[in-house]
Image (cartoon, rainbow, N blue to C red; front, side, top):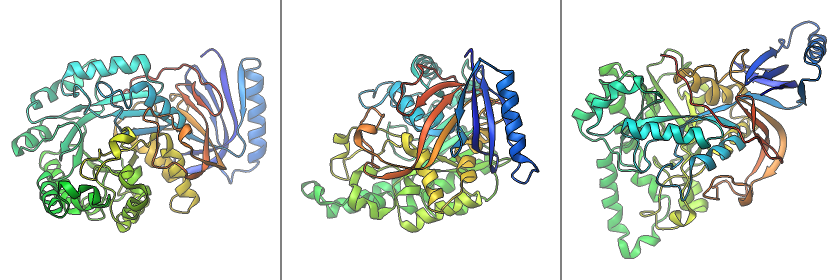
Length: 470
């Protein structure tokens, strides 16, 4: 960009504090950050003088955003999305879902490999990077999918033209038929890569046993009578714990970097440790659905909140929320997984699993702050700082001088109610329809470009492939 943006008097939420300050963006990067401590003498005078100096230095070559009363955050980094591209683009694609991301303040995403064809070869991986370069409004990276047979390829992944963000390992049956269920294959995968291994952990044998059990009660001729909350009993706590504990065991045995995705139960939390993400070998993610919903919500929302692993008990949800505060949960992602409503409006046995969440992840988490569950610095830590640290992403995730200008401006105490026509995702619905949010994303900058602006057309910007430290 040829001009600068001066974001003035914002409440900057960054690295553990909320401070009033100024940020100047130019040429795609953060050029100036002025953020005096709350107890600094003459703080208001310092800010006023700094504003005068910025206006004098860049006279005629900048645009000013008066951000008083608004929150300025680093752009959200979502470590867990399914954009359905290639092969399933009738319900989502990289272009549509990256626009939804920008509308929600998400400036970077990491997309999963269970598309068509699956991202299980270097050629399929490079094809996704090429597609994103053409159409993605925000920054991107992609996981390489592990299978029972492709572990010989893992060693070469760091040397590809585009290094993947990690290796995705389905240690439980889920969408895309990528189950890795041989002990020998698991050991070869955990011992065969220095990349982070991100796991979907559910024990397939336990799920099969539970399905047989409940099919006796609800045979095919009566399956429409089965309540949606049955899903939480089929994909239960035991299924999750068996698989998660095996993943932790293997990571310890092979000193692998393990990231357990969408932890859903209080019992699983015993496998992880409290504290900051820096230096951890084994980390855990919670997803938005499991932080917002509990099994009681099946009675109202039905299969709209059916996902794998399942939404479980209220006590599990509360344990996950508490684990955010202690650091036992390191990262918050969305598992954004669009489907058409007609694919959800079937029996609990046949409805597909997954829901679109990326557009509303940040405002939902900020509303948990309003409810007293979290505070703003914790939300930024889990959605911005920790993903950057965990995946070793270069120059993103923080409001720091010289970093890429991925920023989101949010107005608090700005209530609005979600209507179906507000949904940007291609599938065109959300389980949060009718909910009133109290934070509103005003604009999103991606590499200093306007990727989203409330009520206006945004720039036709393009994101960049994420770069990682060795």
